Amino acid sequence: MFSGYSEDFNRKNMIEPLGDRVLIKQFVESEEKTPSGIIVNFVEGKKKNNGEIVKIGCGEKVKLMNLCEGDKVIFEGWGGEPIDKDLIGVENLFIINYDKLIARYD
Image 1 (cartoon, helix red, strand yellow):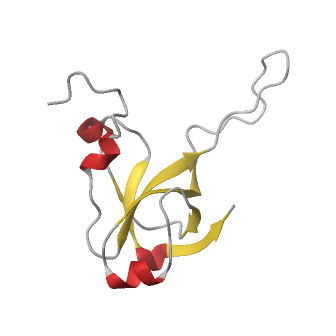
Image 2: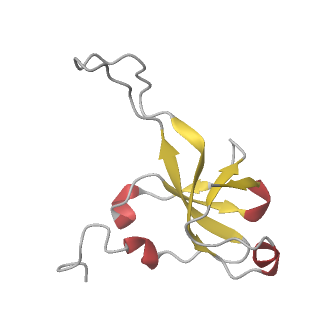
């Protein structure tokens, strides 16, 4: 079924959040390097509490929030269900309930 599609295929399209949930691509801190290549601020895959909305469920409460795919959001640090990378081949995706979202930013 996946042969012939690009890696991301937008395999994210295979996951549809139900009710008042959203699918988020969580941002991960990257390491900082000096011009000579020395790593100065290495944090092993530290995940931030912000990300980009990939898909939005069809629940009434989440619709009232007037969110759009592509919006950047801040969410509570403890919440959401991570999506196994082996399932769709994309890392740092998870589904979170609308009430765990705190703010939208540019």
